[in-house]
Image (tube, rainbow, N blue to C red):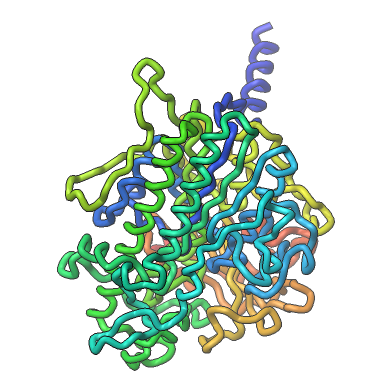
Length: 566
């Protein structure tokens, strides 16, 4: 009798563990907020310098994923991957110049799925990457109920708008401006915030007019740093510091290095006459780049605050889920690199948080009040909010689609088969609903994120950051666990979209407990040749992700035996 009861309890426990939590949510609407090139430089992620009170306030009422990673550290591929819940090898988009419905498969997107379930879906700003990658329409009408809104002033973003010392205009990287002197007296993110606020107020006035999915994409902190100049005052240069590891690591394979060409093409950076590809930016200019990035993040925070306050004012905050994330991170001098275009954490790690009324936050109905009061960063008072419920285990942006769907009360898409080009609706991510409403029980070694980045050659060249599909010769596949980052640079055929697992150009292995900044590559010091021989006999049908998992297990087991340290 006791043994039968024991077996029954074990079975129930296993089912409970493997099944997503049955979450009763009050969220019938979704506000989906995307930043551009935003790393985890936020107060709620532990940055002691940055001033982001409005995003931090959102985090205090949200579930915050501390280790979320993008699938590719560049805008178009990352956004397409997240919004379809398919990895770049399935969307077949590694640059900006193909549309997944034509090049890969007719995959259903996150907003398209909500639209099919009766939601009114709307897009403001940069949600999909514009241009060929979204069919020049931001995937309208598939994904959106109405044509997407783009801020008119964005047309000036790449023009000569930055005033120099002599008063002339330049196309600079550093471009803090007097907004009143800009065309129309505005900037793109100010316009996007205003349009989103207008929509939210209208949705609130409409009452029970059906659920909505509103996606708002801000352009900052993407370069150029064309931002209101007053935000620089929040970060005096004498309070700025260089990256803790500003040198190119000695053991970094040349194929892994990102030569940050998009910065080099800006007039103020060209004037520095920095040698290609490894020549460092002068330290005083590095400090100014970091100052402008931080200022751009605080400017972004203010726009997010405007949205959240409008959500409150429209009486929608108690039945609207808010999702906040970014397409990828951005290097600020770490490893001698700038911008994105790599597999390091600073380029692939993103903020990810979910505010779900009735799950992550309970409003006090006895004492109703504003959930998201706007916090003015310039009032000089200290506004610090601790993140709400945090998850430290590793997650990915391909997890967003199934998680948002489930938490909104819809069915999460089924898991994709190994080959899914003909599957319109499925996910290559995980439904993270099981993480809500329960305490995390320490690290889970099974939680893995996969990223990748293409290169045209083994050594840095001018198109290393953004090679066209036809020029891709090497693909860097990177596995991130709680303890390690493991990357293999493999030969890649752009005609077949296939990597050759036997053609290994280079490898990287970082032990994060001893080397959190990923400066000491242990790959060559590990028994990697023997590992490659041992795993060469694995069946060809085995996915690359599973193959690399097994390789990492083999490598790290050998490291533990030899007590290998950075």
